Amino acid sequence: MLKVVGKDGGGEVRSMNDIMTKGDGPPAIEAEVAPEQSSPKTRRGTGRRLHGAIAHKLGAAIVSGEYRPGDTLSGEVAFSEALDVSRSAYREAVQVLSAKGLVESRPKTGTRVLPRNRWNLLDPDVLAWAFSGEPDIHFVRSLFELRSIVEPAAARLAAERRDKADLKEMRDALAAMRRHTLATEAGRTADRDFHNAVLAATRNDALVVLTASIGAAVAWTTQFKQRSRALPRNPVPDHVKVYDAIAAGDVEGAGEAMRLLVDLALEDTRSAMEE
Image (cartoon, rainbow, N blue to C red; front, side, top):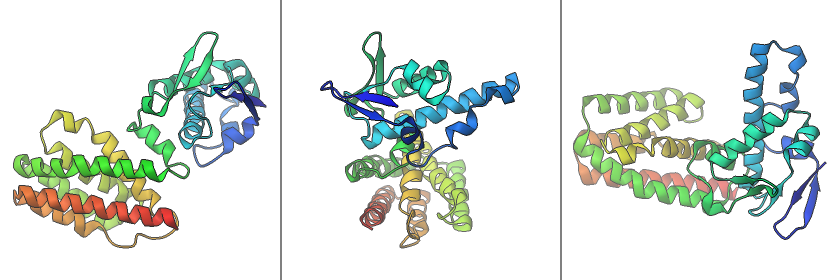
């Protein structure tokens, strides 16, 4: 059992089995910790998978609110003993969380969950952790607000600056979306590729930096809204309208088509969350 200490000094004792098996995520941790059955080369790979699995579970618990800002996590000794994993695996997992702004570790005070405004919410891993459970509707709305600010402006720039290679990337992505549909991983990958191609066509380095974050937001929200039912409508025609406007060099038309695409995607996601 491990104790999570609240910022008020109180504590809650939790089973590590509960913490490490809650929600969807990587394969069970237990299947990954058998160093005596592995070669040295395999052990190194297992270690990478192990600290990644620990980071995923702890990250999902933090983002979901199971651990609140100000909570102090158990130390590496207690954690590693409870899981029967190496202390180095725990330390590496905490380093991952720290790099994403979720926690900070200090001598004597331990590992503390940071305020939400310190979290790198646009990090693709953090987005994955947020959608591994039931995401907060306010967070989902904030993602779509970001998209509604960035993507229509990007589409307008793309209509001005795109070249033949950009248009081919968009066409290829649209063809894959039609072929595979957004109900499949391949189709969702193509959807992400389409949005990435639009950002790349802006020729704006500051916007292109957002590619991984926007792409992750598109992929996770698309997958999430299909968790209990099929998509209420086919979104491919909305993407085609964006492409047609960009290809025609219609700056305002491209921006408006992308704005409508994002708005409709938010409505689909909101409907999925209300079911």
